[in-house]
Length: 202
Image 1 (cartoon, helix red, strand yellow):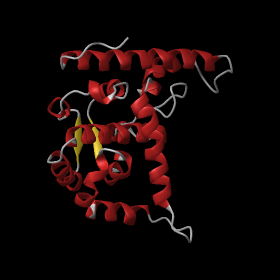
Image 2: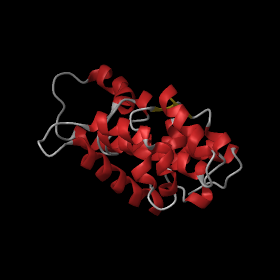
Image 3: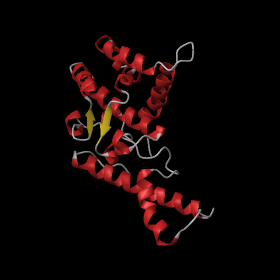
Image 4: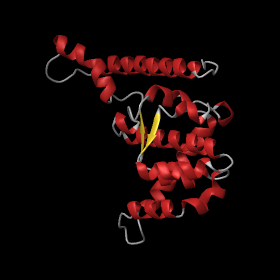
C-alpha cells in the first residue's frame, strides 16, 4: 500500500503512542484505563490536534469501523490538502456511541474535519498492521502475506487441485496474486475518490 508522507510519519507516531500507553511501571497492561482517561480529557486536548494529532487520536482506538476498505487505502495516499470533505466519508467510516460523542467535540474545533479524517485513517492503518479483521478496517498486515481477503482469492486454486502442504514454489504465485489484489483495492479506492470529485492517483 502506498502511503503519503503525512501518514507514513503519523502512523509510526500513532503506534508508538499506543505502545507507550499499554504498560505501567510494573508491567501491567493499563491501555484500557489510559484510553478512558484520554476520552475523559478529550475536550482539553483539542489544542493538540494541529501539532500532535496522533496523541489525541488514540482516544478513538478500537472504536472505529470501515465499510469501504478500498476507499481507506486510497485515502492513506493523500496529503491533508487532498482530503475530501468529511461529509463524503460519513458512509465509509462509523464510530461507536462513545467515539461518536468525541467526533462532535472535534468537529466543533478549527481543523476538526482534518483531525477526524486523520484519526480514522490512522486507526485503519494501525488495524491493518495488527492484522485485525476487515470489519475493524483491516485486510492484511503486509502486501506479501495472505489475509482473509486474499484467502478467498486463493480458494478456487486450492480446491481445483492442490492437496496437502503447498510446495515452496507456490509461495511466489501467492505473492503475485497478493499484488494483483492490492492493485484491485487501489483501483476501487481510486474509483471512489474520483466519484467524490478528486483527481485519480496513479
